[in-house]
Length: 418
Image 1: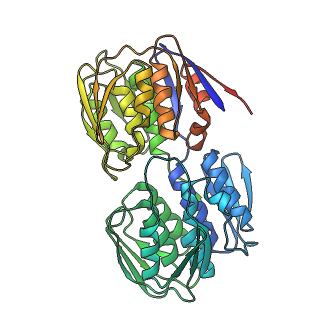
Image 2 (image 1 turned 45 degrees about the horizontal axis):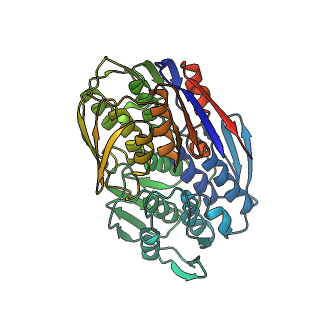
């Protein structure tokens, strides 16, 4: 178990650079399987989820090599289409190889994926979309076997805008015969980045970022060179870290449009926000106003920033209401924030936060990736020392988080017990 130790009370000051996007990297790594050859992915974060996806690709036969933050992926040796169950259970996004393996081999064997226990993330939309393309599924002993001698384009309407289902269908459809149209598609920026990578591979695809994606199947795809977009959740976490400590931080390597919902709420709370082409400056203004948020699919307020925003609103002068509409179990951080002195009441899928709370250090436990980030932020703003246990969750989505915050003046360190 890893522990992060924080001596709070230090306003963060300086500049911090955001790493490449975890949620863009993972489907793009999977998409490399669509063809045989060497692709180069740039600005790749060396985090746990990416390393698990590396293991998935390697067990299928791929060869991967790190060159600082560039990842070279050689898929020419890939011959297997079966992913071991233990790797599938290590990470939710491991299911993204389904569409790519179907697109290249016409078959795949996977199991139901694992990951943080923040709510149900079923495979039914993935499978429904692939069935429309001609895929037959057989489920037995926890395994999902998919087989499609021929993939054929289809009109697909998703019951809800699922990011993973949209990505899997896109990857399967680029090699299908004819035209595929995905309606009610998810609009997240990471889907646009996947489209851009697929287009570099030779795919004929357009519409990502809207609710309708149109794909004309092609007979051949090729390796590509691609730089991953910045991680919008990491950038938002850094903005909230500056805000909760009353600091002044320039967050660099940002696409401000991707953070528009958060920036609007930070301004509503009274923070000084300066937006440039690829950076956002966040500075405390002495007093935080309460705000209410509701998590929604992009371009709404992201669920992956809800726990961190909850931590910030503990410091606001009044009552805030946070409503979670994406994941039913995403309030596990609330009990731990209470241990630090927060005044929060949960009613159904809403948290009512009464501030300002005088946060005081305590031993708390991270239940998942974003809950861990919220507890680190609260610790940075607390009196005395805070210990965040199970801090290894942070490594799933943040690259060198403690190092980046130390460079901003935080007193933060980690101990690792094996």
